[in-house]
Every structure is written in structure tokens, then in C-alpha cells.
Length: 302
Image (cartoon, rainbow, N blue to C red):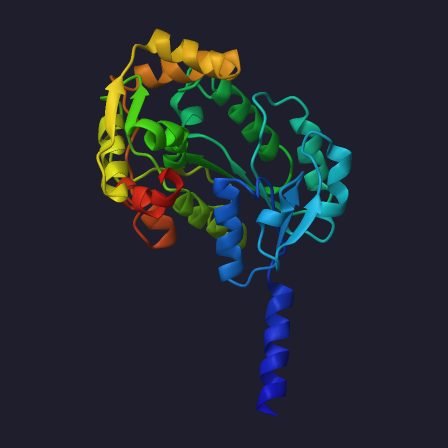
């Protein structure tokens, strides 16, 4: 009798849990959201264009493309909430995607940017200019959709320093501009923890929480902490902004991205990003320091 009651209770609990669709599920943040939902026993589905083999076997992967809203219906069927990562540098087509989500789900949690709140409300004056403009437009769309919504506004991602991997492996030296730029970079696991809270509880509906790492760390110090995690020195060699911009363009980065990111970072020298305890307030656990992120990702740099 006990086994039957336990099984029935488990099945009943499962029916009350949301089925959540995660976009960007093979990326750093989306992957961390998937992992946290799995650990909590919440049914999760991943929207993928390719790379389904990189997902755990028990995660349902459904093919679809945010650039083609008509391809999303199968992935959204039976879904209660969506974690939305927008992969493009403009909001073109986003209205159709949000409309499609609204036909199936009741809640959307959008991964936005702290830069949106730094400007005049349309993202034009926020850090990153062109980038924050599309985030601001996506926020407007989800807020007007009739869905329950949350817009997460993280500061810089610690995982962006993975752009240094090849340099660290080859030379042990990071060549980049702005050695003294100090930012409260946030661990993707902390973004995921807040996202899952927003997806599975009602506590962040209608909120735009700015979430940060626990302290500002200069880029020079970030390189040193990566070296500590590797057990060998990693140096930071500062290069002029103009040289860095030329190298980014030569590497194939879109001009609008280069023109947005580097000037925004330079402005942060005099107007640094805020540091707050929102991650701990929302999740009950303090945000992870960059030292922890470096230790967690040492294998990526090895």
C-alpha cells in the first residue's frame, strides 16, 4: 500500500510541475538552466537547431529555429513556460516569436542585459548601444504580450572570458584592451539559478532584476585568477582599443558588435557596473566569485 501511495503522490506532483522550454539550451546559460531544472525534477524540453547530442539523454530535444517562428509550434506544444535567449543582434522577427510563444505558454523569462536599465529606457544610452537596443525591444515585446514575464538583467558574463582560451593555451598571455576595467562578472550557474526561480515560482513575475557577481574584478586580475586555477601564470598584456577593434573585425566579429562593445567597456572605467546581492536575495545562495568560475572552467583553458 505504501508503494502505491508513494507512486501516486509522485505522479500527482509531476502533473503540477511545469514543462519548460529552454532556448539556447546548448549554450552556457541555457545549458546551466537545463541542468538545474533536471536536478529539480522539472520536465524540460530543449529547442535546438543542431547539437542535440550535447544534451543529456533524458532531455527532450525538439528542432526549431527562432529565426523561423513557424518551426516553433512542435517545441511549444504542451509547454507552460519558456526561457528565451535571443541569438541575434537585432529584434527583427522577435514580435512573431513572442506571439507564437503566447499561443502556447503562459510565462516567458527573457535573458536581457543590465545595460537596458543603464540608459533612457530604450537601450540607446545603455552600455553596448546597439546590443542593449534589441534587448530593450525584446523586453517591450514580452511585457506587452499578455504573458506572465520576467526580464533578467545580468551584468557581464564570466563565460565571455572563454574568448581568451586560445591565447592562454598557446602563450599564457591575454592580449586585450583595458587591463584596469573592473566588472562584477556573473557565473552562468547564478544566472541559471535566478532563471529557474523565475520559471518555477511566481515571485519574479513582472520583475526586471539586475543580477551581478559579488565583486568587481579587473581584467588583469581575471587573467591572474585563471592562471591560479591552472596552476601556472597567465599574464595580461594591454593593447590599444583601436588595435583590439581591428583584430576583432579581422576575426569576423560583426562591425556593429565591435562598435558597441569596446566603447561601452571604455566608459565603464569611469562609470562601473553596480554590484548587488540580488542573486542571494532571490535564491538564498550568494553569487559565486570569479575565482570560483575560473576553477570551474580550468579544463576549458587547459
